[in-house]
Length: 367
Ligand code: NAD
Ligand code: GLY
Image: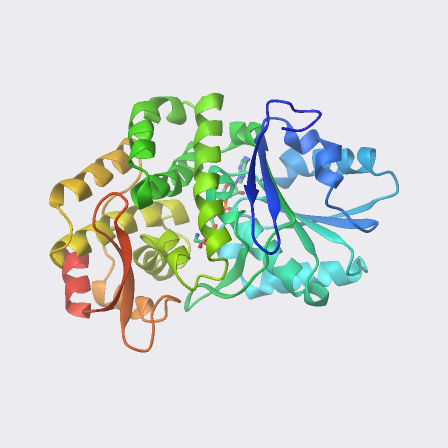
């Protein structure tokens, strides 16, 4: 909770560089909360062309009201995954240079996961690292990408291939911003919410089943609960394994398939959450094909994702051989061969190395 927003929730992320995730309506107007992590006298808001007209001025006004004399710059990028490029990263770094921002400046990443990842990467690199505050405005960014410090841009060869770990100084999730989010993007965020249930929390999956209608209707209390529970799951994992040497890899459930789909579609087909939804179903089917998972578990996961209006099968026309070629460059692949997070049922995801390509091709053909 904050002084101005007593109903806000807070989730703590511990570790070497601890920070708080604050969740609640109206937080983008809470100047004291926004300005609390700011050390110097300059800040830059990086946002995209959909989000900036809705929220950037509000954030700038709130910051200036709380910290008179703070120089607040704004830089706006095109929206969408296709903009998560080295070229746009360079554009942001040039904007930081033009604004003469120094090491004590703060970058505010205002937008979905694309802005969070790209602007976070610029913050990680500018002068070898300046403070970044994540202001997620999509459900996906609130439950996943704004937390944990992974930042990156895509290459045509693959997703998130150039990046850095750079934990934010704070995450401030204004749930009121979800009011303007297109329905398709809300559903995409629900895919990552389902992921946390699938990874280890049967009670959370039951809760999602019971509250699916409320979530799809954007019920404030249901959304706040889903965000807080998801953030608590992610915080616990990244606290124990910030650099993905072990269990953090489980958060990539569905992502080897999903990233291959996104790359093959030139970042202009399924969005990230949709691709992860298909990927989680395929990860369950792969486990089943290898003799580990029960069909009914995969069916339940599939049914819940479908209830949230998410795709659960490979889009037509994608060539399994080309998808496998993308998987070979996935960050989870190692010299020995393909590695997958397979899903053997609720709470039973694990990393499986040296998965035979023939089994993956079979699952892709069937899926
Ligand atoms: P996104 O950032 O492209 O946002 C989706 C769309 O919604 C965009 O068009 C955006 O302009 C618009 N939008 C955002 N907020 C809005 C609002 N409040 N009102 C109206 N429109 C709004 O996509 P995303 O789904 O948020 O993020 C996906 C990205 O996140 C992918 O690049 C993925 O790789 C990355 N990701 C990173 C991590 C991580 O740990 N760093 C985790 C998961 C996903
Ligand atoms: N979204 C995967 C991770 O943060 O590790």
